[in-house]
Length: 170
Image 1 (cartoon, rainbow, N blue to C red):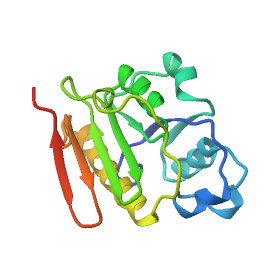
Image 2: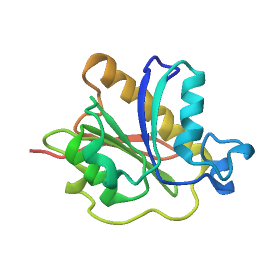
Image 3: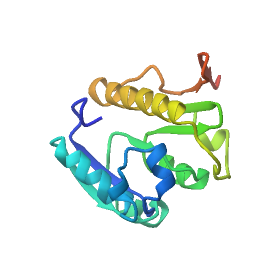
Image 4: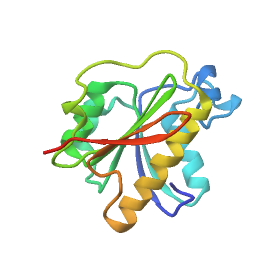
């Protein structure tokens, strides 16, 4: 997103980079053991963006976070995602084995209407992670620059073979 022109970020994540993250996330071997938010902040600042790093669980700090036009929920924890969408318009990006899911909330569609609990565990295919991340970044930039996105109020299912929209009918 920073390469696409967005220049302000607030990063919230309590996690530390593990070796397994090197295969599916944009980290380097020298990042192992560092907090994810600080490693990402450094990368964003190298691209000319401003980033605030908050090394905490989002539910512990959400009331103190600044207002924002859009939140990207990238956590593997569904209750945390739901807490984010209570405060912000949210673009959820999730990767499951063989499936990517993108959902941009609006008044008619919230993640809480579909899922309420759970946490993803298990392997993620790097090709799917990359594909979902690139579509999420593109749609987030579209929304931030134009105030709308084709994803708004819809869920996009991505398989290795096709993209398929699903939306909740009022």
